[in-house]
Length: 149
Length: 110
Image (tube, rainbow over all chains, first blue to last red; front, top):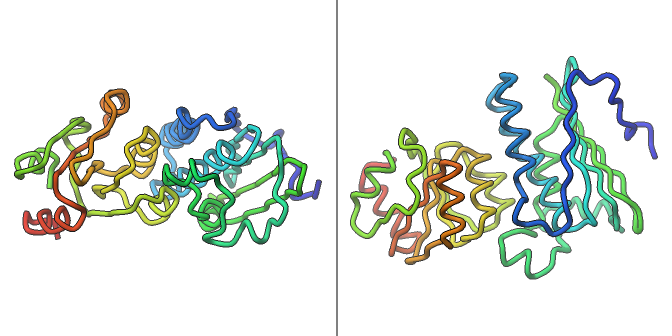
């Protein structure tokens, strides 16, 4: 694991974890909705809340569609918000290709529901100030996203 | 334009009332959810043929004013019940997407 992908939980003022289940389309979006609610409660700026909503929703959907399940962690730090998406595999063979807008490995069933446009990872990257992804075939995918406050 | 004004337009039906204070400030049409996440703006009425539960999360996260189902589509009662629970307005129309844009423009949405 690279140094950029070590979670510094001790520095967090607040931290929340959300379990996301594999292929659980019925609850997909519920973690993002709860995160948005919490962001509102602490009085974050509307535009920052919108960016967080996009990032967490895309991360949540990616875990539902592509992984064996995973966890989304949101940490409020003194100067930033960190959002982590860590799954249980099966990993991404070619991360660079996965980051290409329009590229997707989603199944037909997911595509019919309007998912799998190949925009998830690019959307996540676009909405944050810092984006780090680490993955390999047969391993878990770890994504760190930072929004500076 | 308010959701209640939409209901008065011929051929529109309100399936779930949602937050009645919501104002439609624009119109957006796409069925690719990530595309919508990237391009949708708060206050938009969102035209989509997707009728499953996940569209509610997208509409809520982006603070859309309502979901408009074109071409006479509706949603399963369970999804509509969820929309009511989450205060998201769902409207149906017999018009296609182009027709909906046209009617809303003529009704003053500019």
